Length: 171
Image 1 (cartoon, rainbow, N blue to C red):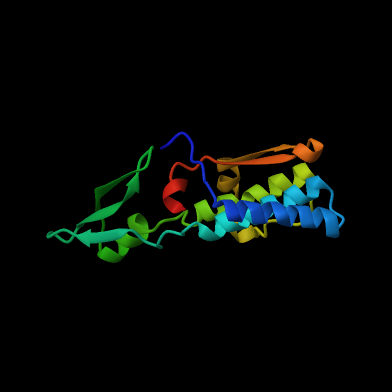
Image 2: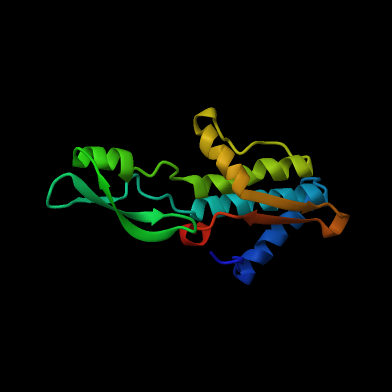
């Protein structure tokens, strides 16, 4: 896991984002804090949209005896790619119990969960749209991210931090 991932956007995109904040302040009667919040929400949506979701299952292959199966995937902490051998009654059981990726979509959900934190800090409205069906993933996603909001008039800033060790590979 790298200590930090810094994303550099093209200068024209950054300039367009600042122009949008300036326009929101000027024409929509936003204060600078609300304008920065709108920009943060746009960045979060962009990061969420560009984050890939893993496939539903890992690659599972049967060994010659029919009772042992090789499962390829990322295991352990820190996550490393390796193949493990498991014992199961059938290929279907091996896929169901060992091949299924239970927390797929966690990286994408982690970005969305940042908005609730930022919205409360900035006094903004709206939610990330997380429903109760994704409560477990949402709880884990919220523990994997945090933000730092500094409200200082014209120098208002938002820092987005995602601590998932594989977030760089998901982007």
